[in-house]
Image (cartoon, rainbow, N blue to C red; front, side):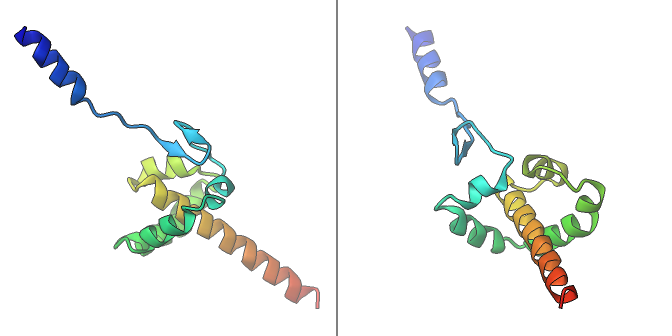
Length: 112
């Protein structure tokens, strides 16, 4: 009887981690656009911007990581420099869209 109680307690105390991406439980998309479409995206961005090390991480990714691995995925970035996946998503999205904005501005001014 006592072992049954212990196994019940052990079973109930197990912690289960499931990643919940915009595509459903357990599915993490490498496509940043899928996350940006989520209604929770602005909340994630605000939260990441409030992190103390956000600016330093973004600068490091911009100057070092993207030069070495320009097509790095958010998950790989998260693992490589030890930051939360949400922070990696926001940093990569911002850096990649800033790069597109800068390219578009350069092309529009050079065509004038």
